[in-house]
Length: 253
Figure (cartoon, rainbow, N blue to C red):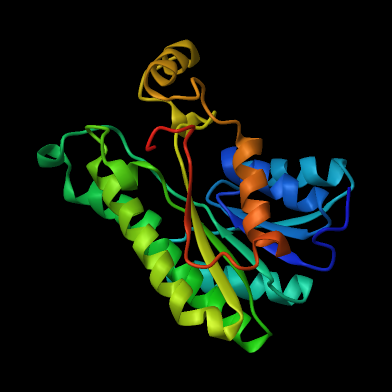
């Protein structure tokens, strides 16, 4: 454990698994008090237990980011229990099953857009309100490289949501940097998570697919994504504003 983020409170949505869990652990190792949020309470409790096992401080709240009242309660609870909100990693998202655009039903389209785009807008809306009143903060949103290149058939809704999120991030960054709130995004490629596999795909099949199509020849480790989030949240990146940092091993190069 180190003190890089000592005295800071970090909120991580989608914190029950994958990139969210790895980032929550990384923030705790650097001294932050971490609030993890998501839809699955047992996964959130597992993340908290892993952090506490390492000597860190963590808490969790079940929240669905598509519900405005859940988001209000999440931000309010974080502040009330831990005294503030200094860093927000808005990571919760869904990909959906692959389907050609003309075959996507309205309910699926709506769920993907409401989670990946509207959900992050709701989070930023209430995170920014607190940060404006309390001296600023840092926000990092999870977009995706498919929102840049759009080259994966069957994931049009996901790509559209992430492209829009990248633009929303840039707009918010320009609006609030003079308020002391620094906002950026990350755009990972394929990461070693459940979401990084196509439906029915084994790890071996995924690895072969990625090796053939990604210059670095492998999937990203969740810890690599977490390290980048921490860099964006820290003083080392203090002049980085409104940037969407691509983490895809050269796939969009």
